[in-house]
Image (cartoon, rainbow, N blue to C red; front, side, top):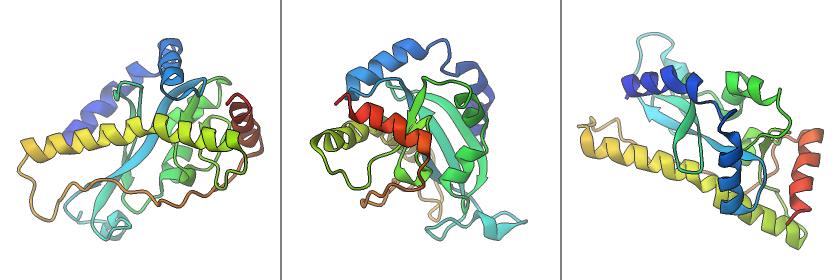
Length: 203
């Protein structure tokens, strides 16, 4: 698993969404009617054997040793950006705040990612609305879920493939990712609120 993730990380710099962004945005628009989306982002826990140093920081919220891997996928579930260097105890939002992709996104004004509320709403990262109060906000949340599912499906397929092709030791079970079914707004950013509202107004 580690070698695979390292290989993906090695080639990721050649598949940033800049030049391919327009067709990617078109396909995401077709999926969920949200414009300017170039990818869906999420984190997944990859179990590891306990390291000999700093063992405690690798213990994830589920109680086992893991690496927290952040990935972005496109509309066809292709991995376009992978960060596989953080211990399992590190929160998804921390990984996003410290990755090169975030720096790239902040220099563009028209490329958005979709993510769960835990990431916090940003001008470049749209999250669900915690308590939708209008029909348009409900439509937005539904569109967000429908579009963002591509990353969960991609992780599911990846883990299923490893279950079938690798003899994974009993403690290292590749679990399905889970998210809290309760949607909250999480940390809010003023410009992010404006960006999200502009999408709501289109629906």
